[in-house]
Length: 259
Ligand code: SF4
Image 1 (cartoon, rainbow, N blue to C red):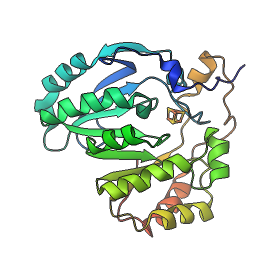
Image 2 (cartoon, protein in one colour):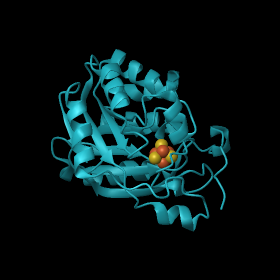
Image 3 (cartoon, rainbow, N blue to C red):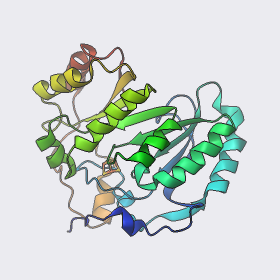
């Protein structure tokens, strides 16, 4: 059993600005953003979340390429099904690793009236990320833990960039949802749920927070990759545990949704 090595985004080595390195595509997704969505799961992530159910997206050199043109054409073909709310979601892996190409893609799609959504762990904040967010109608920001030490234990990295990205989004005044994976014993400590609520309670751009109860559906992928699964023996939260977290978040956010 091994752990997956950390990689730099320069490992991406994707020189062609028109080719995006992806893991997979879901054409009629209903769980990642509002309405019916065309979801692109990009390849590569620098977090190492213990519960990740897509560890096969870690490798920045893995996956396959698809052209931006093909994505655009497929999204436009699906446009009649999007209704008022649907559109494209870029998830992963981590979309910010592909920020330059996503600026190009989102610019083009917005010109064609497509709603854009980004599901990100907030790993990076820079000028390009800021520009990408300008073309993003909805940012779904995954906050893995409000306490930096626990964030580190869960993901191997700090939460400081994620919190900075939330500040940037708030400054932009554009829509944001928070997403929170609830893991018993790891991210369900009452004091930290309150701390998270306190931290974000005055953000005007946050429409809701989504609780994502921890599940074990990805464990077989870790085994298949011969990697050590770090949450062995941890069970999904019970209905009571989920309810408790929901009640705490309800004190701070106008909408709390359990996925
Ligand atoms: S941020 Fe997402 S893709 Fe990356 S390791 Fe965590 S759960 Fe997996």
